[in-house]
Amino acid sequence: MCFIGAKVPYFVIMICALAVLAGCVASRGKRSMKLIEDPALVKKLILKEIPVGTRVEDAKAIMEANEFDCRFVALDERPHLYCVREEGISLLVGGKWQVLIPHEGGLTKGVAVTYGRVGP
Image (cartoon, rainbow, N blue to C red; front, top):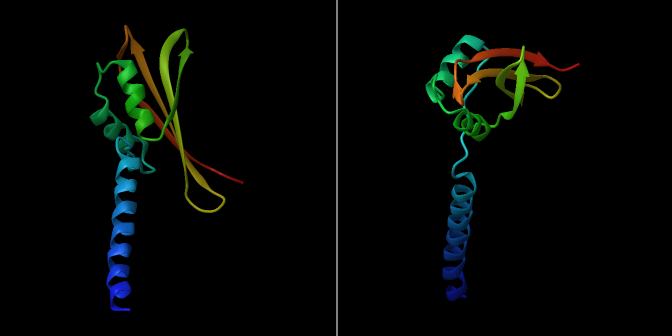
């Protein structure tokens, strides 16, 4: 009986350690910008991560690593990277950030951010 009692805490510790390790491996490389409802502040945050002159492929990778869905679009025949991220605020209402990153010659030229609430 004492032998089994001694094994249970070790077993529990091993399960917890494996769960923590699995969580660390699963989240490696995954980042998430802490977004707020103020587009001007979000723009500053994005420009810290993606300064003007960043390769557009790198900008796309950074935005996608921060849970944005991105695609290349043309507005007024000029190329842009368009990224969207939605997060739930409550059960029925969410926040939606839209980011436009114009680029030329493969390099970013700036950032424009909008924010709005979506829901019924």
